[in-house]
Length: 173
Image (cartoon, rainbow, N blue to C red; front, side):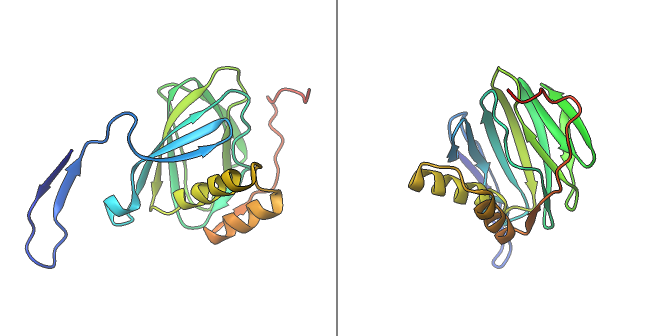
């Protein structure tokens, strides 16, 4: 459902919409899926909103640094383990985690139960990285190598962050 207000010539019309719980542009990765609920096209690139579902024992993206955008995460269900800068935090439902551009961060779900979250990317664009990863997985059946991950991230003004051991991480099995 779309709502709108006519604007004079040359001005952006005011508009709003409702997307249902299962509506949006899907991005499917192994043990992790996203629906882009508010796209770059909806906001003239100002921001993107996506809803993510991450299965249990999913490491998530490698820690990284964005040059061009900020990210806000709101955990809706379950728990997610975040690295933000030089610290770590387990975020639970109802908590919000913010990582500004140029700050090392990453997240995953080391727990058994799945998690659901909303992410807001300001400005838009990085959702295209995840779409490229999903396309690679669909085409090859495998997640990108570290080298390909670095190449894809670089296209989106992002670099891998230096590793930092999580003091509360479970020992490898």
